[in-house]
Image 1 (cartoon, rainbow, N blue to C red):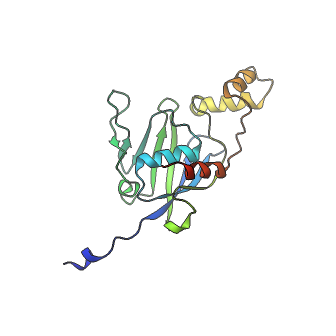
Image 2: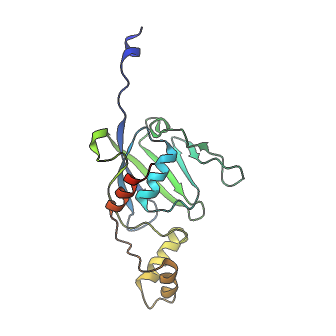
Image 3: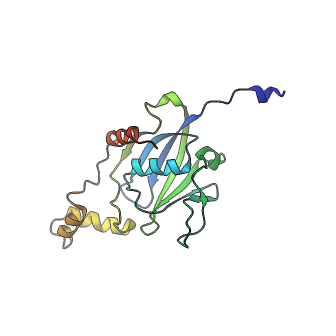
Amino acid sequence: MDATARRPKAPAELLLLHIELNDIEPTIWRRFLVPETITLGKLHRVIQAVMGWTDSHLHEFDIAGEKYGTPSSDDWGAPVNSETRKTLVNALQGKKRFGYLYDFGDSWEHRITVEKRLPMISAPQEHYCIEGENACPPEDVGGAPGYQDFLDAMANPAHPDHDDRVEWYGGVFEASVYDCKPVNQWLARKKI
């Protein structure tokens, strides 16, 4: 028997990921840990949680020249590879950066960077948000231009759309607020 065949498989490691929402100022970003063996489908659910999205729209990963998502039986979007069984470490093929598109209408494009590998004992739970800045835009706000209009109207009580936007959103929107604690509590309760 070959000596390499007898070697035990190395334990999975955690990947420290940095995700940033493109085309928004001030920058909306998060830093979080996931197992390198996480499937892309599960990674999508973690991203939804750490960013603050509600998983109300289609999404797609662009990794090492391949597109992954939930294949559709209709003609919505370009064909994608299934994300169900593909692990992040296998999809990366050694690359350190990849893209994530959420909501094909609003086109929320994210850039994700693998910052480092860490042993599994580095986090108090399997999926863990370390830090982040600024609130995620509300769903269906109209992409980056719509979000800027939303912020302008919310910040100015004299703005002609202020009252409508407050009513649509359901209250005051605090764009500069982000807290990892409720995200990590949710991730600990859910089976991703």
